[in-house]
Length: 240
Image (cartoon, rainbow, N blue to C red):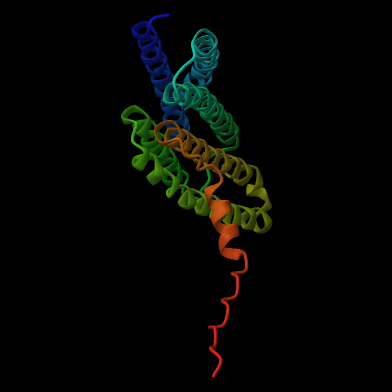
């Protein structure tokens, strides 16, 4: 394969991944709209989109593996192909999360509408923004934009913890609302996973562009902060 053909294959791989990304983003948006308006026909659209997402995941994986088998890519091209494989997997899991949310919406619709102490649409907006921004960083090969996504994850984690506290308290105090609260809790967890997948995508963009492995950066930094600092040696004294 000539260099020109190889570059075209890389471009095609990127384009196909972005098509899949569009499907995954749309699936999350539809799932949250289904939650907001309790429209089961939107849930059906989410379920159908998952079939397409799964098919695209297989096709993209195969195309990436074919490129690895046929060529000896340069370092940056190799990082690009490896990143595509990993981003591909995360996008498929975003699609899975969307389907999980839509299934919870089906359950909630059967149980009837109730007011719950959790702002699912707000959490969904932040998680979807993370996905969108991580993919924009991929399109533009922008490592700094990708790093900004990493800082957004804490907010989603905090919202998920707050939802857990509020909904478990509701289940304890008003047991008749437990089924609805549990479904909302599972939706919150799915959105937290979507944010995690967006974080993974951002990390892969940084790896591709800069060759830096920033996975688990939060746990590493936390460990550094907790580790005892070496004592400073006392100043040397000179003999009088």
